[in-house]
Picture (cartoon, rainbow, N blue to C red):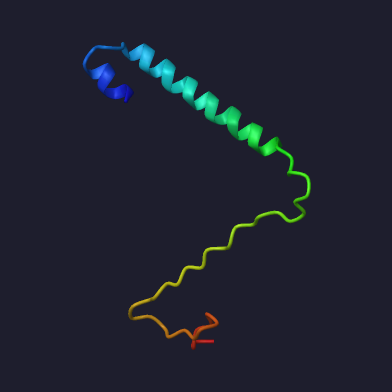
Length: 73
């Protein structure tokens, strides 16, 4: 949104940069606020993220079984 305003001369480059930097500071302050937040009363378990499992295939390499061990060793 700020780039078209700067390109068409509605806002100067310095103003656009200032607004962008101000937005970054607000994002950082919000992250600090969320990190300091306490759990709500009555909630005993924390929500944890499920780990992401990636499956990679090697073309022309050694064969691997489901456990990830190769047949070389």
